[in-house]
Amino acid sequence: MESKILSVIKERDFYHAKVNELKESIRKLEYDNAELVKSNEEFSARVKDLAMKTPYRKPYKRFNRVQ
Image (cartoon, rainbow, N blue to C red; front, side, top):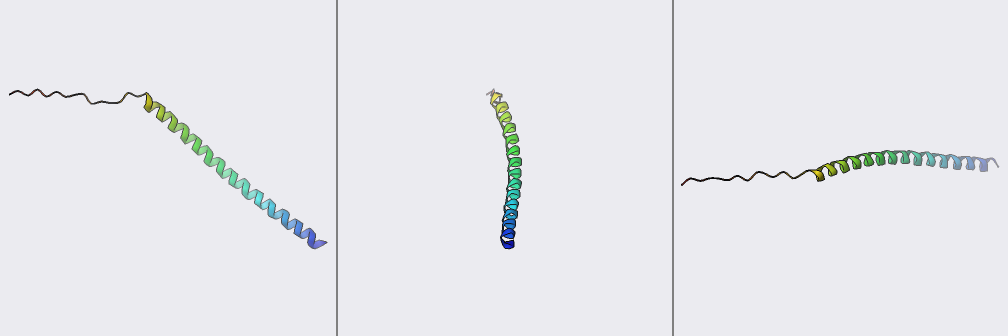
């Protein structure tokens, strides 16, 4: 009977450790997701600004050659 109780306790501790590992993994993924969302917003704002700008064109230079 005691060995059965010990095996149940071991199994419970095993699953408890697995749950803690998964929670830690979720925490890391949430942090990575937040960083990606932030950088995506920055890039979206940058693209929007670049799309609104008029392109820069060099002025045409006319060479007056005297012969």
